[in-house]
Image (cartoon, rainbow, N blue to C red; front, side):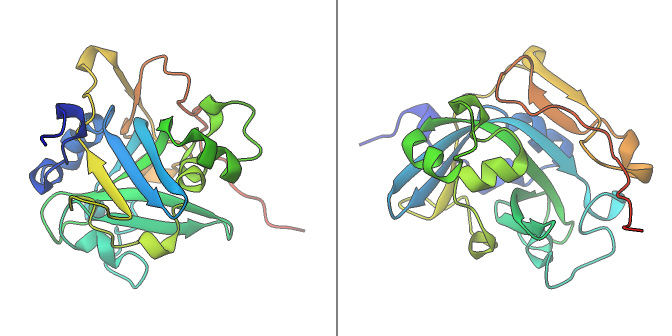
Length: 213
């Protein structure tokens, strides 16, 4: 049986391109997260691009570490990091192996398995808020560090895989500065989102954290 076009796997070649090509092209694509309770399916509505060693805001800017090693591997793999001591965020590696470029998944629409996502996102006031922001997205999909290094291009029943979905026409894509990025990286308009989509997270400029007195 042949899968419909929107449910065809995204091939590795899709990710083996410049990060600023991959990032907007991920809008409208599908993430399938297979859990013991059933699948959760998300349509991507907002992303941010990070350009490895060329980008001071990238985790890979200063080279490989135990934390970011997956970013230096082949494209099409999942990079998950833990932040602020409480949240996970999910990225997809792209570009040639060794270049450490990646796309942060910032927001999406849960199109299947919303009942499972709701159990993980009890504070969401409605389904549009289930994956509205990178930490919320990871929580809704039950993504944690155990998925770091997962190959998202493999077909079949895998923990997480990427499907073709329906690409968003360029005239429906907006872009601007990345949320919460400071310094040299703040000037890059490398956040991309589907214009007027209600699941997209609000933009917030970087706010320096104050040390306790």
